[in-house]
Image 1 (cartoon, rainbow, N blue to C red):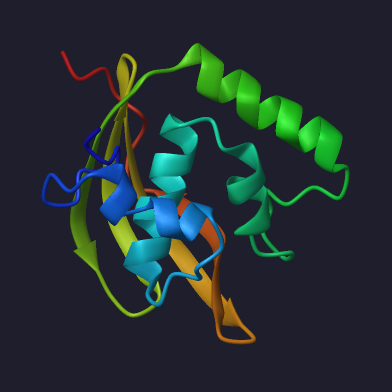
Image 2 (tube, rainbow, N blue to C red; image 1 turned 45 degrees about the vertical axis):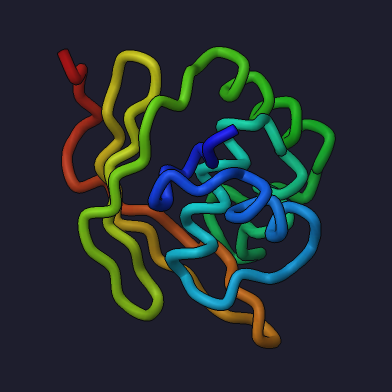
Length: 130
C-alpha cells in the first residue's frame, strides 16, 4: 500500500509506519506527513500523542478527544497531501479531504527532542476542490 502522505509514492511500511510504531520524527515535515497518514488510517492515538499540550486542540479527556478524532476520520476520505512550503518548525500544506481542501500553515515545537503539533493557521477558507 502506498503511504497516505504521498511521500514519493513510498509504501506505508517504508514511510510513516515507523513513526506510528514509536520512532520519533526528526523534522517538522516528517511529523506533518505522519499525522496526515494517521488521520487517513484512523490512528487517533498518534494524533493525540503528537499534539502539543499547549495546543488549542489538546484535550485532557482522551476518551472524548479520541472519539471526536475517529468521528472526523470516519466521516471523511483523505485523498491527497500537498506540501506547499516548509521551514524548520512549520509546514504550509493543502490537504484534499472528501469534498474540501484544507489550506493550512501548521506550527510545530520540540519538547525534549520530540516534535509536536502546536497550532494551525488557515491560509484561506476550506474550499470545494471541484
